[in-house]
Length: 135
Figure 1 (spheres, rainbow, N blue to C red):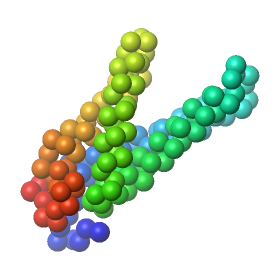
Figure 2 (figure 1 turned 180 degrees about the vertical axis):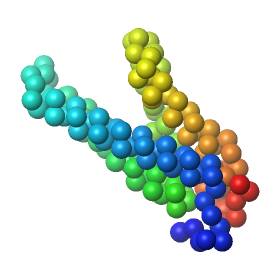
Figure 3 (figure 1 turned 120 degrees about the vertical axis):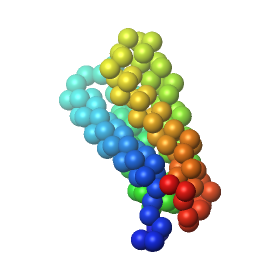
């Protein structure tokens, strides 16, 4: 845990906030999607509910990872980077399917989080496990 003499770098705090927001949005969207599936008549209910369950799993992972990032815990770094990298092809697919507004909502936070965690000394300090950060 971070002590008051070694505050969490600004880049990591911003990244953790964005990751938490993504996780909450994904959980809320997956729950809404599951509700529509239960109330409606999908062609393949099992497959559709599986998609909602995957969304819940990834959203919950993002929420947990955001908490870990805010406390500068190294194990939170890998799942965060992995999910953010996986969301880039999803965003590109959304652009190709002519859903630019949703694509921007997926791509912009993902690129920002990756930039903050990989491209800043404060973000890299989480991976290195450093107590003193240059930010």
